[in-house]
Image (cartoon, rainbow, N blue to C red; front, side, top):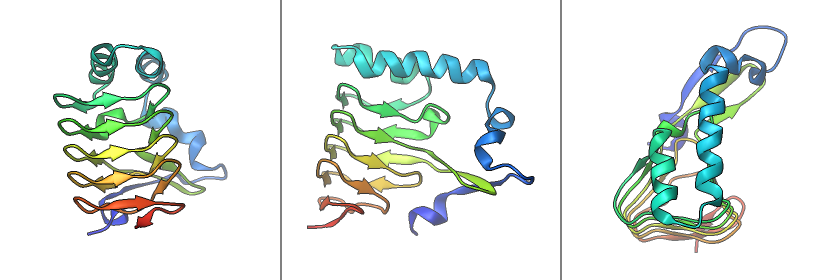
Length: 160
């Protein structure tokens, strides 16, 4: 099963693209709330504070997770992110759980496995599962699942 099989499709009929429909999915106040805690998670020097802030917006954060400076979780659907024990999300990485398209938007869970490492500047797309002990090189685009123990790199990320 690939990432596209795990995505939920939300049609948005009408003339405008799907981004215009986000207030139908989430309230403005919820996005503001999420954004405040995303900012804390991005800039706090303490891993405990970062993990606390991520938990406040619904991210599943297991023991020993390291969230890098300026790393950004999905602001619309952070509750779809699971970070397993001792996972590392590097500096300025982004984990997305949604894709706004022209006539629909899609949402999907992202799971980062135990001891998996996501390099600086990486973007992880919705529906992706990164396996236990997997490594994602810096500045990669993770558009497909990463097998346990694998090393991937590039745009799109492929096994090395």
